[in-house]
Image 1: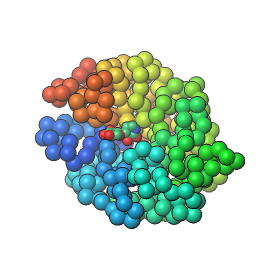
Image 2: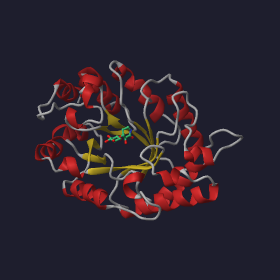
Image 3: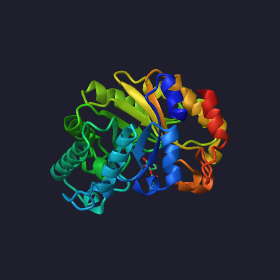
Length: 305
Ligand code: XIL
């Protein structure tokens, strides 16, 4: 119902948010999610440090909770995230040889994705692997797979191949932030690398644009998405973690209409429900205030739909 129904009426798959067990236990929060959202991303429960803090020892209880809750409420699920330099256990960061890291990536991706195979619409297989200048980010992944002394991308194929095998029907995404302007180096790097990886046969289906945007950037969302979603061979794209300082109504409307106006964009996910539960609560970046009253951005989104 609510905003989700309006998105679906526009031919999109969902309007989503993130949550996890603790926040879903807040009655008013759960009611708001049921009323306005059709998709959930686990905010933390499927990250590496949450599911495999010690090598080979998996904790799925919180992820299971999210999947059951979303499924019980008929919601689409976006899995988040198998490979990320952040919220990554130290034992992974300590790996310094390719054979071990290849093995660990394959085992992690396979085990986590098989756990919920068939129940998750799309997975952020790799998160935040680019620097602002468009170079590959320094991480244990790019460093162990370095090429000519520079961060290398050999782990990308390993991760996506394992992901495709583990859950063949899940849409496989690469996800990042600061892809909000069409002309910045990071947006260009994402588009050109993904185009090349797809041409090489790496099974990437989608690009996710987190959209933790600054005020004013909503106006450029349409052009930015056109560039990202326009990558040759890419099946789809999505806005995956939207929030805007002060919940700026025009910027939220800009993001939502950018997705609605782009054929390949399947949906918009906002990164939380009420401001105080945001990862950046002091910027009041969401579309409900702390007692779950819809802020002006809510109406602006309705009008954009
Ligand atoms: C954030 C969560 O919202 C916080 O609860 C957690 O402490 C840190 O991570 N990019 C991402 C998300 O891909 O996973 C991050 O989520 C926000 C930035």
